[in-house]
Image (cartoon, rainbow, N blue to C red; front, side, top):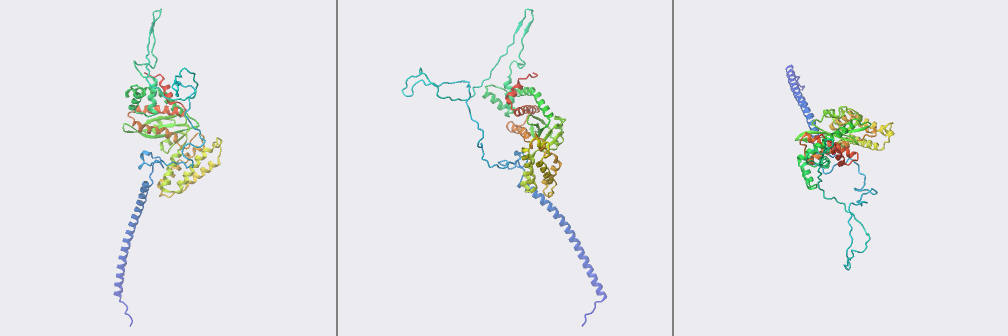
Length: 479
């Protein structure tokens, strides 16, 4: 039996039901689509959070510290026991190498004192042999320091009356300007203890009392130090002028934080292989540079880290510190294990090795090895690094910005690849702080800066520091 066809009303009703169902499905679809968009947004947000959390976690798993960055050891969270060296192993045993020139304690040709030990009785029978002739057998020498006692010199002046009736009176030497005063040896020793050995005033008192049998108050030490600095100031200014006028050489510069009565201050240094100039300022920016070296260093290459203020200093050119860059790359290598950082690190090491092989002519003419390094550097700077390696990308951008200052040392024979000289000069401030504590006044900070500049410059020129300070102490002051 044939199935009956639906009526018009039934078809109309079915269409109406289907239409409602379609509308319902459309609503459900729109709702699901909306939910999907929301979920996609949440997923993107969670992905970003996941990347950020991974980065934060990696900082704890592979943190920056004194082994792989410029972070000072005092800021290390877990204080690594051993600083990781950037040098490759040589395979040599520690200690003195075979064939090296040794040093031993040797006798002097003319001793200050001789003691003859001549036998007076026979060790066999006990007979007196003091009057018998004797012959030399052997000699030995003992080097010692005699007991140190202060020497007091009394200065007296007199007067005479001439036949013409005029009375002439003698005068005291310029350094004898009080009824009782300390001499230049004590003055120079105080400067030496303060800026070379970083001895606090209290312990300096003990040294003078225990070793020299001399009582000097802390106020007396401060007064003598001020006198010495006053005499040393012209030499301090000469060092500054010498660095400013330096030509065809380099100037290294660095800065570090210090404390003065609990407030943050900045110690700055400018130095080369002949002189060191140190100053202390409350400013880490360009103001200190312009106040100290207004005209910059037009005849020298300025070697420094990536601190922005240094790039604003007028100079013949600039050189980034390779040691800083290698430490940064060491950190990236530990954190990301990315090929780019390893290759960049190797490139810098090769450049340093090339520096040691360059002849004088190589600096003024084209060099195949140097040209190859320049090309490899450009390729590394053009390489597309995955944006997820944020710090690595930031480092690459910085290197692009200062690209012209990476291999400057390969074009100037006197320019070193690193700024280690400046770091050594500035490190003395940290040593002083650890031994003697913070500066108590601007005068104390200034005194240290002046005398430390003098002592460091004397060291670089092979001079005896104490003798150099003695020469200054013997100069005429304003007292």
